[in-house]
Structure formats: structure tokens, C-alpha cells
Length: 241
Image (tube, rainbow, N blue to C red):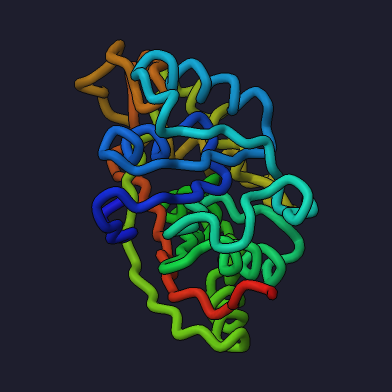
């Protein structure tokens, strides 16, 4: 939200809004928000949040996917001051997605994309047990596409910390084994040994975590960090006559 650098009262499109983790605080700060997502379940949760916080006049939910024809169901051209997608650019047509944000915003656009490996992986753990992880270059493609579009994108990097918790060694192995794929399934014994030697008591066990679920009894002795690229640019498209 800080990186968006919104001006007081500016309207925004939150594309891929999920349950409203950004849309709701933006509305609480006085910004009219078009909160768009392809998932009816997410929008249903958002609706509950809108009602709970009394934000009916500031948030407009919209069922919308990147690959939809935005001329039919999306906000009109230059409908908002700022259009952004936070960690939600999930499409095979990246150029088309960036162009749709560009055409919807009057002043500023932004996307946040992963800048190393997928958030599903713990790079520290994977390196420790000798598993190679493919790093995502989607943000590089986005930057280059924007240059080709005639924009001057600015990139800011930041990290978000995560702590995975679990109630027993085997529960931890079962949870982290999701990271062993693409031929790395045979590393399960190395994974178990690593967790056994690096699991520590969680001082916040039983307390609600980031998703409201009670935290487990144990966690690893390092913080899992995910690096993100925040890419912002001034729109280059002009309204069609």
C-alpha cells in the first residue's frame, strides 16, 4: 500500500483482490475501490468483509478474470486513477494483462510479482537438502514488455517473512514434502533429517496465524523469506475516440 503512493481519495482497481486484504484497508482510507477477482468464493468472503466494516459505498465487487473480454465486463477505459494487481497476475497472456491494467488507469499502474522462486518453496531448506528450485523470471518479462509498450517502469524489491508451523516431526515432513516435486521426491529422508535437526518450539503455539488458523507447536529455526518485485509505471495508452 505504501508503494502504491496513492493520493487522497484516488480511485483504484484491485485486480485479483481475493478476500479483500488490500481492498478493505484502501477503502477504509477513503479510496473508492473496484475489487475484481475470478473466484466467486473469494468475492463472497469479500462481501462479508464489506458488510462487516460498512464499506458498501466504497467497494464495488466485480467477478472478472484476466482472460475475460474486458470490453464486455470490465471497468471502462480510464475508469480509475490507479490500477494494480498484487501477487495475482495469473495468466498465460502477460502482455495482455499488463495492457488491460494500463488502459484502465488514468495516473498509475502497478503489479507485484515474485522475484525468486515460487512462494510455495523454502529456498533455505531446499538448498540445505540439495534440491534445485526453478526461479521465476516473470517479473523480468513484465519489465521488458512494459519497455516495449513505451512505459518507463520502476522496480522496488521487498521481502515478506513466513513461518511454517506444525505439531510434530511427521506433520512437518508431510507439509514440507509438497516442495519435493519434479524428480525430487526421493529427497524425503533428507527432508526428514533436516526438519528433525532444525525444528524448535513455537512460542506462539495455539495463537491464530495469518489466516486465523491456530499455529502449531513447532517451527523451523529460520525464517522463510519470499522476495517480490513491485513494478510501477505511468499508463501509456490513450482512450479510443
